[in-house]
Length: 585
Figure (tube, helix red, strand yellow):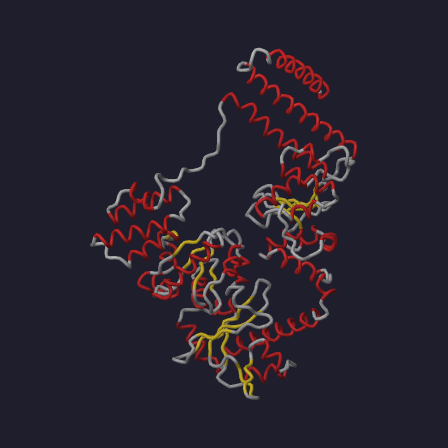
């Protein structure tokens, strides 16, 4: 098991889970009804009409029998709020007014927390001020610009767009009157203080508030009107804002469920325009090139990313850098190439939603190959040779055999080299073999089925252990032949809660384990003990049957001198099997 609990002490996390009653937490998102010892509702993670989402209050776990989502109360908050583990813990602790462990060791924590709340408050007032100004005389130029770009009032309100007035210190004076100090306004990047003079950071610009997952306004992007430079101005890093960590429109990304891809664009206007046309899951970086932190953030929301940067040369080079970052973070990424070197905003306004959705996503390898092709003259032999060599290096990173075959066919057509020659250039004598699930021969079928039954029986034993109604000596971890189940059994025997064990698993395993550990807690101790004894008896039977099959398979080829002993063992095993099966009836 791999721990993800960071610096939070296990005892403190146990207390947090006990205070954060999972039924109350889930009920704030999902309407639940009690049925038996569980609560049921419509799953928030997939569309359904019949409730298959269950919550076990006793063990503080949830599980959906439809989409197989499951875990602890912390995992639920992570999924609903699109947070990482530490962020979800902090959110729960804040809701419960439960001090974080770090507060005890950091006397400056309260001051920083208070400062953060003050700076976020100033940003919120500033956003309201900018939005109000947009519809007043001082915002006429900005509003005219936004309307010219095709934005309607609904979209403007959705993104909270605004206008910064031309005056040098209009916003600063307003916020000072609202009780904020000059130091605070400078700290959150709204006011510039230079040579004892203070003036607004944003003046005469269209304003794009940068909002986090929880709706807090962290900073702003400002687009200049006319020929003023720089064209885009962004809030610098502050105590509440780090441009490397988040993305623009993160708050809207959080609200969109079941996305199959995130569309990553360069500019704020690209996000706003695509959104108005109905494209979901669109975000932009915050005035910087894509960072690994942003890539990992995006990964929370969808299984893959479509990069839709501007069609100019700078945008295309940025795509190559982005592909490298996504590859390093093991995030599948494809490329949407904008026709005629347009921006996504320009393209969708010119050709419409259907044309945008009709763009064919290029795989990372194919896009890199196309960019490489621009560097060589394929009408010459040298050009074809060098292009083939360059693409061979690109294709070494392609793991899927079908995708590799497709690229090899394309490269062969472009260069005239055979598939075998190209594979040799890559250092391969043949295409990588596709992995197959091993299907056992007919004579081994019974053993395979027996192994499956053994694992299911061990899962039931683990579930019975999780009830807490068995003495520790009834089921010991050595009864588990499956190593992952044995590790969980050891955790339960050591007094760890099912919720804490789930949180220590890899994300892809948590739901399955939650399903195992969500026990039938309405059973009394005698019933639980009887079920455990039945499971242990069944495991003994399966073990004896497996040993008998091994002996029978080896008997024919065994030396003559060893056969009598083997036959005697088979007879003894059969007698023991008969006894166990009789006891099980």
